[in-house]
Image (cartoon, rainbow over all chains, first blue to last red; front, side):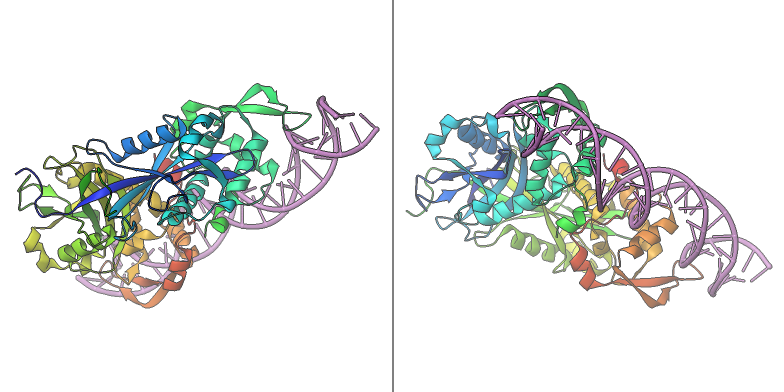
Length: 235
Length: 235
DNA sequence: TCAAAAGTGTTGAAAATACACCCATGG
DNA sequence: CCATGGGTGTATTTTCAACACTTTTGA
């Protein structure tokens, strides 16, 4: 026996949803397709699984090509398998989402793929079922970030509490009381106050914080509360 | 252009993790493989995606074959893609888990697949990476059931609060105070008290409850609390 | 000196926990 | 009549939400 006889063999794709935060708003990285079909349209960065690599390896390979980055936060989102989702040929695609520090993103790779960051509200229409992928990823991020500290993946190694608050506010499209917010995040014990201040955002300056990586890994799976009344937000 | 040239084509499998509750403990439905490879060993019920069906359709097809049931709770768990996970041939498998009312399960189908329910603690070793699938499914169920009312899918249309409590206790392998438990579940507003009692478990009898399906669908995504101190349980 | 953002504390309300006794009934 | 499981209430603690003023400093 050298294989499964009589079973269909299907092209297996991956699509990568890359999110970043520029200090103001959550953004997604899209490429301008340089090939058919849908040449010239905006799309997610994708690729195909090779015979000898896992889908995680394929995603990391594609993300490295696109961003120059390794070892970023990457999570399997969902596998999309509608028979007609790809007009070229029956294709099954597993979507992954990545959260990166937008500052580490390698600008010079832009040109190869004509990649561009889009605020989610200004995102162009995407090809195939990619719109659905983005919506699902946003839901997942909002869900998970209400309970787990994933949004730190979007920030540089040092960040201020006001920066962090703007990030949460932009992800949930809401305003949060700053007194309660800082109490909540500091009570997790994940943050270590630095001596230096970030003077770029104000005259007085805001203290930098860093993640305590020990506690970050230890508490990642715990239910923490980052968002007031999450029940009201996630419908 | 009639397809993607030069891309690998891979056999796409699905594996179904079927969970049930017998009033005492959470169980999983396994089949005894009647074919190679690993003939005679216990395994999940699986199948292959046909060219013209989605993976959801494939899972439902396979589950109908196995259990005789339609329309059960079914959720995509994860896609497993290690190149060597299947010794026969490179195969990618998307795992789905189903929660069913064990009483609706059609016993007569047993014989076709030599299917059997196993308490999770007494589960035999499974083939390939199926052990990993079961562990991941359990994690997902525990996670989700702490916040959302999915465990009702395991119960018959009418059930008592003591039955429900035993279910939660067995899923989380813990003891819960019955006064606080009934307060918690009743406060969700999801349960409708019936006039009749279940006399099978005690002389006095326990009132039956039914789900208010309107509210069940409406509140499914909300964060409800079914478990005390979930942070301590889910590590 | 003043505009603009950072930082901090208290109080009341709501939710969660701990805990123990009475009830109904079949045998 | 009694053993067994079903059902319920309260007091305490903890958590969450609402809310406003002072500090710093570059321009």
